Length: 249
Length: 344
Image 1 (spheres, rainbow over the protein chains, first blue to last red):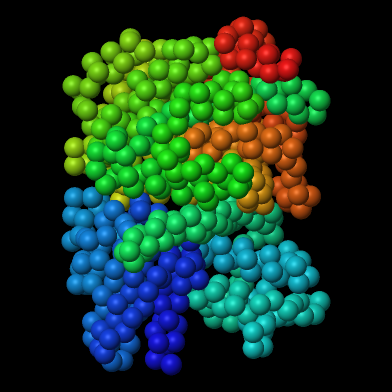
Image 2: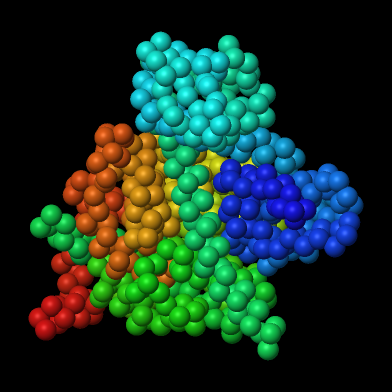
């Protein structure tokens, strides 16, 4: 039971570039608890995964678990990575990225994190639009709608329009969109427009098709990268199996 | 050549290597990790029948390369994207010197790219000039994530990089292939977009910049830049390998490129030997967009677009007259082997 709660917390840690949970992506190789200490082993799709992203994920793990009641020490290991030692020791000691890579980090990670929060937002926005389109909502329904028109009902959601209810769509789509919208500091009040650009301006009817195409490019990039990372991770397992066999011998 | 819609199409593989990733050449653990990572890419996207054992992948023979590219792979000419990595491999991974071994034997089949590294500083100008004098260097491959003397990367917009680009102008090198794919370093946000290409392309409008791997995983940023800059091209290596096992993603990537960049500015590449061109070229020749993608983007991968992407665009950049080149190639040793094969 306790263990399941820890996994749930890990589930909240995202790969910042792929905007997906590290648990769902299969990056968490081990989670072990020993009293007040937790040890997590991360294995990323390549040995060369950018250390800034690796840091964000490893540090995300530390933060997610260290606030759990009863946990006093979180040891995060980034295995089989070119900066394994620096990352594992540094993150477990709660050190900042700049401290770990003083010569190479030209600016703070916050800017990078922000950039990918934003790309993730664009992706979540497009997924919402596509789901509502498929559920019968027209472009004009969407640009006219306010957040208050979204109705949640368990795992499903609906959009009420002047022509009636559109739906159902999966509740998770709405939740992911609203979560990120709040993280970016965009309004989430019922009277706020349903569809907002990252700068806070509403999407308008006249340029809707063009905007969708731009969103689409960002999402295609993100999905292709995710597919590649998943395939690379699957390929990479062969080396670990070899190592594990050697260790057994 | 590959037949598309009943017509023979000339194929220039815009991204090939002839590397030595064997353990004997590993300088340290990075060399081992490098070739193993490449092998993961190979396994991740190759169809089963095209998978090699690791030992062969680490070091393949001249005959393997000739057969995989020209005899079986439908490729007529290949562009060597030399990649040095001297800090990982004793003799370098895939230097222009190594590639020249093949280019010298089959001069009409290969376009040889050299390179520069702005971190060589002014002292490197002579090295660069000598390289261009001694080898038939027709383009450059730049790898901004190369490790060098404690530094782990550079940017195309660095002032010293500009000095080298000026030297390219002077020496008549016009085509600059830039690796903007999966990156390790530098760590700043600049590693995750392709904006340094944007600066260089604006400031050197007479040079062509071919962004290898279409910026993946920064495809969207790449598209905005390539749309604005007339001299920025899309190199398909890595993206093309999605075609067999992830065709839907391939279609989506292509649709975006056709919409934002256009069919005149996309260059085919297999990234041989990460992947062999045979299955990619054959699938590309057959490929058709799903109807929903055609409708959504308003673009199509027509036989004409395929012809341009597979060969005509690269031929234009490198000043190759395809008909004249075909006549030359028919007579070289590879052309003769192909003719014998056809006769048999």
